Image (cartoon, one colour):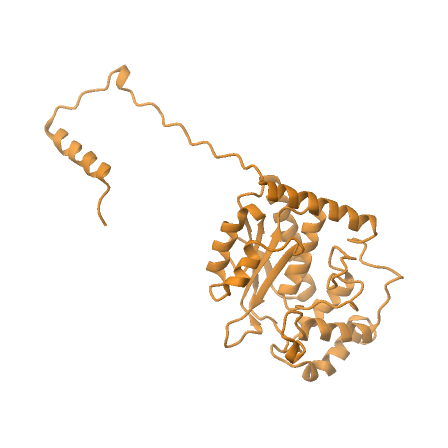
Length: 308
């Protein structure tokens, strides 16, 4: 590679001075410390400010209508073992984004190796928000590990990246996603980088082409313009879906696996579903028909109707 001209001149000057007597610098020659560069102050774009207001208004509207509940449900949201088994089958064996030709049906997918969550923050995310989101993710990972009995941790390197980024971070997100998911289509990369505002968050999780249901890589996007409760809700839903409960159902209640935004956080109903998903009686790639006898028994066990 050619050497920069400035470097050549500097080296030449050093050689020319090599035979000269070195003189002690006088007061005027004393080198002054180089001032540190000042980091530019981030100013949200008009688009980002508009999104932040839209999500703030949306969260307030949802709360006013009694949605984004954090109580986990109550007497008005009853369910039994039969309900739980049916919902588990819908959430774990069907994919809301699969083609209509196969009805969305597929085998069961989950992580066999430890899940190592890595929070990554876009340039637009403030230090205060980063600290809140990191703490929320860390607490949630510990809860998921207790529920599933599967190793789930948060660190600086791993296999499940959680991107906290705003619309002004589009280039940053695109670069990260292309590196993490090199086989992802341009269309899906664009969905991560510049999602429609109706997408508060999204996740991709799966395995290699030879074994796609044996999850080895996950990437989630949590939109940074959202207020605190909506961001926390996104963390809860996208990470849980990235563990293998990949579908939504209007029948799932009380649950975050439902598009009606009724609940903001993982419920005890959802905990039971995740406990079933990581039960060793189920195997990666099992069909719903194969798994159904075990699912029905596990549902009765987690509801306290049978001892395991």
